[in-house]
Amino acid sequence: MNFAQSPDVLRTIHAMELTQTYFGAGWIRLHIAIENVDYYIDASNILNDAIGDLLYAVIKLHKGSEKELVTFYEEPGTHLWRLQREDHRIKITRYDLKTFRAAGEITKRNLDNMEPVGSSATDLKTLTNQVIRLVSSFKSEPGIEGYEQEWGYRFPQNELTTLMELRRHSKKTNNIVT
Image (tube, rainbow, N blue to C red; front, side, top):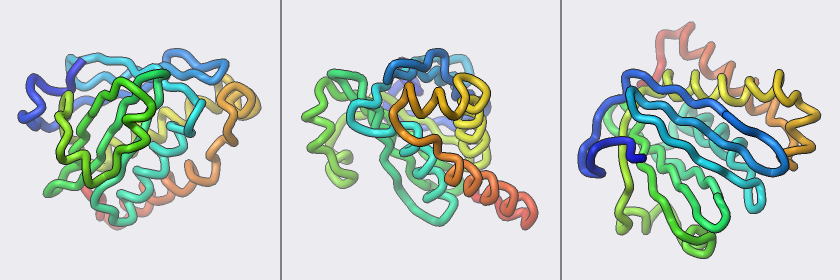
Protein backbone atom coordinates (compact mmCIF):
# COMPACT_ATOMS: atom_id res chain seq x y z
CA MET A 1 0.00 0.00 0.00
CA ASN A 2 1.44 3.36 -0.93
CA PHE A 3 1.84 6.26 1.45
CA ALA A 4 0.50 8.57 -1.21
CA GLN A 5 -1.41 8.28 -4.45
CA SER A 6 1.79 8.80 -6.43
CA PRO A 7 5.45 8.75 -5.41
CA ASP A 8 5.70 12.28 -6.81
CA VAL A 9 2.93 13.59 -4.55
CA LEU A 10 4.15 14.64 -1.12
CA ARG A 11 1.51 15.25 1.47
CA THR A 12 1.74 16.09 5.13
CA ILE A 13 0.63 13.37 7.51
CA HIS A 14 -1.94 14.69 9.93
CA ALA A 15 -2.60 11.35 11.63
CA MET A 16 0.08 8.68 11.94
CA GLU A 17 0.08 5.51 14.01
CA LEU A 18 2.89 2.98 14.21
CA THR A 19 2.08 -0.22 16.10
CA GLN A 20 3.12 -3.85 16.22
CA THR A 21 0.49 -6.47 15.56
CA TYR A 22 2.66 -9.56 15.93
CA PHE A 23 5.96 -10.19 17.60
CA GLY A 24 7.72 -13.51 18.02
CA ALA A 25 10.25 -16.03 16.78
CA GLY A 26 12.38 -13.43 15.00
CA TRP A 27 9.50 -11.67 13.24
CA ILE A 28 7.53 -8.51 13.78
CA ARG A 29 4.51 -7.23 11.91
CA LEU A 30 4.40 -3.45 11.94
CA HIS A 31 1.13 -1.73 11.20
CA ILE A 32 1.51 1.75 9.77
CA ALA A 33 -1.66 3.81 9.60
CA ILE A 34 -1.33 7.14 7.86
CA GLU A 35 -4.61 8.98 7.78
CA ASN A 36 -6.92 6.53 5.97
CA VAL A 37 -4.16 4.36 4.49
CA ASP A 38 -2.99 1.18 6.23
CA TYR A 39 -0.11 -1.05 5.32
CA TYR A 40 1.97 -3.70 7.01
CA ILE A 41 5.64 -4.59 7.10
CA ASP A 42 6.62 -8.12 8.11
CA ALA A 43 10.21 -7.65 9.26
CA SER A 44 12.72 -10.31 10.21
CA ASN A 45 15.61 -10.03 12.64
CA ILE A 46 17.83 -12.16 10.40
CA LEU A 47 20.13 -9.39 9.14
CA ASN A 48 19.53 -6.39 11.37
CA ASP A 49 17.70 -4.90 14.32
CA ALA A 50 15.10 -2.85 12.42
CA ILE A 51 13.45 -1.64 15.63
CA GLY A 52 16.76 -0.39 17.02
CA ASP A 53 17.66 1.13 13.66
CA LEU A 54 14.38 3.07 13.54
CA LEU A 55 15.00 4.36 17.06
CA TYR A 56 18.58 5.39 16.20
CA ALA A 57 17.42 7.16 13.03
CA VAL A 58 14.93 9.33 14.93
CA ILE A 59 17.56 10.15 17.58
CA LYS A 60 19.94 11.24 14.81
CA LEU A 61 17.25 13.44 13.26
CA HIS A 62 16.79 15.14 16.65
CA LYS A 63 20.53 15.74 16.75
CA GLY A 64 20.51 17.45 13.36
CA SER A 65 21.01 14.70 10.80
CA GLU A 66 19.52 15.60 7.42
CA LYS A 67 18.87 12.07 6.14
CA GLU A 68 18.61 8.58 7.65
CA LEU A 69 17.92 5.17 6.15
CA VAL A 70 16.02 2.38 7.96
CA THR A 71 15.95 -1.15 6.55
CA PHE A 72 13.26 -3.74 7.25
CA TYR A 73 14.23 -7.18 5.89
CA GLU A 74 11.28 -9.36 4.99
CA GLU A 75 12.91 -12.49 3.52
CA PRO A 76 13.41 -12.34 0.66
CA GLY A 77 12.21 -8.76 0.13
CA THR A 78 13.24 -5.57 1.81
CA HIS A 79 11.50 -2.34 2.76
CA LEU A 80 13.61 0.80 3.01
CA TRP A 81 12.53 4.05 4.62
CA ARG A 82 14.47 7.20 3.90
CA LEU A 83 13.77 9.83 6.54
CA GLN A 84 14.84 13.23 5.24
CA ARG A 85 14.48 16.79 6.45
CA GLU A 86 12.60 19.03 4.04
CA ASP A 87 11.80 22.50 5.29
CA HIS A 88 10.08 21.97 8.64
CA ARG A 89 9.00 18.42 7.94
CA ILE A 90 10.42 14.93 7.85
CA LYS A 91 9.81 13.33 4.48
CA ILE A 92 9.31 9.56 4.68
CA THR A 93 10.04 7.87 1.36
CA ARG A 94 9.39 4.14 1.06
CA TYR A 95 11.15 1.74 -1.30
CA ASP A 96 10.35 -1.94 -1.74
CA LEU A 97 13.04 -4.30 -3.05
CA LYS A 98 12.59 -7.90 -4.14
CA THR A 99 15.75 -9.38 -2.59
CA PHE A 100 18.21 -9.02 0.28
CA ARG A 101 21.07 -8.66 -2.19
CA ALA A 102 19.50 -5.57 -3.72
CA ALA A 103 19.19 -4.01 -0.27
CA GLY A 104 22.81 -4.77 0.55
CA GLU A 105 23.91 -2.83 -2.51
CA ILE A 106 21.84 0.25 -1.70
CA THR A 107 23.44 3.35 -0.27
CA LYS A 108 21.87 6.64 0.71
CA ARG A 109 23.29 8.16 -2.47
CA ASN A 110 21.93 5.74 -5.06
CA LEU A 111 18.41 5.76 -3.62
CA ASP A 112 17.88 8.89 -5.69
CA ASN A 113 18.03 6.71 -8.81
CA MET A 114 15.35 4.31 -7.53
CA GLU A 115 11.60 4.63 -7.93
CA PRO A 116 9.89 4.96 -4.54
CA VAL A 117 6.54 3.33 -3.86
CA GLY A 118 5.36 6.33 -1.91
CA SER A 119 6.19 9.42 0.11
CA SER A 120 4.60 11.41 2.90
CA ALA A 121 5.78 13.95 5.42
CA THR A 122 5.20 14.52 9.09
CA ASP A 123 6.74 16.62 11.81
CA LEU A 124 9.50 15.25 13.99
CA LYS A 125 7.26 15.44 17.06
CA THR A 126 4.68 13.06 15.57
CA LEU A 127 7.32 10.64 14.33
CA THR A 128 9.10 10.74 17.70
CA ASN A 129 5.91 10.09 19.65
CA GLN A 130 5.00 7.11 17.47
CA VAL A 131 8.47 5.53 17.69
CA ILE A 132 8.51 5.97 21.49
CA ARG A 133 5.04 4.43 21.68
CA LEU A 134 6.06 1.49 19.48
CA VAL A 135 9.27 0.67 21.36
CA SER A 136 7.62 1.19 24.76
CA SER A 137 4.85 -1.24 23.81
CA PHE A 138 7.37 -4.10 23.89
CA LYS A 139 7.97 -3.50 27.60
CA SER A 140 4.49 -4.72 28.46
CA GLU A 141 4.14 -7.37 25.75
CA PRO A 142 6.28 -9.49 25.43
CA GLY A 143 8.35 -7.75 28.14
CA ILE A 144 12.04 -6.89 27.99
CA GLU A 145 13.17 -10.51 28.48
CA GLY A 146 10.67 -11.75 25.89
CA TYR A 147 11.80 -9.05 23.46
CA GLU A 148 15.43 -10.11 23.79
CA GLN A 149 14.62 -13.81 23.45
CA GLU A 150 12.19 -13.48 20.54
CA TRP A 151 13.88 -10.66 18.62
CA GLY A 152 17.45 -11.71 19.36
CA TYR A 153 18.72 -8.21 20.17
CA ARG A 154 18.98 -6.40 23.48
CA PHE A 155 16.06 -4.17 24.38
CA PRO A 156 17.14 -0.59 23.47
CA GLN A 157 16.29 0.96 26.85
CA ASN A 158 19.17 3.47 26.82
CA GLU A 159 18.24 4.65 23.34
CA LEU A 160 14.55 4.86 24.26
CA THR A 161 15.47 6.97 27.31
CA THR A 162 17.66 9.19 25.11
CA LEU A 163 14.81 9.78 22.66
CA MET A 164 12.39 10.53 25.50
CA GLU A 165 14.87 13.05 26.94
CA LEU A 166 15.31 14.68 23.51
CA ARG A 167 11.52 14.99 23.23
CA ARG A 168 11.24 16.40 26.75
CA HIS A 169 14.05 18.89 26.11
CA SER A 170 12.39 20.01 22.88
CA LYS A 171 9.11 20.60 24.71
CA LYS A 172 10.78 22.60 27.51
CA THR A 173 12.54 24.89 25.09
CA ASN A 174 9.66 25.04 22.60
CA ASN A 175 12.29 24.04 20.11
CA ILE A 176 10.65 21.03 18.54
CA VAL A 177 12.05 20.54 15.07
CA THR A 178 9.09 19.96 12.77
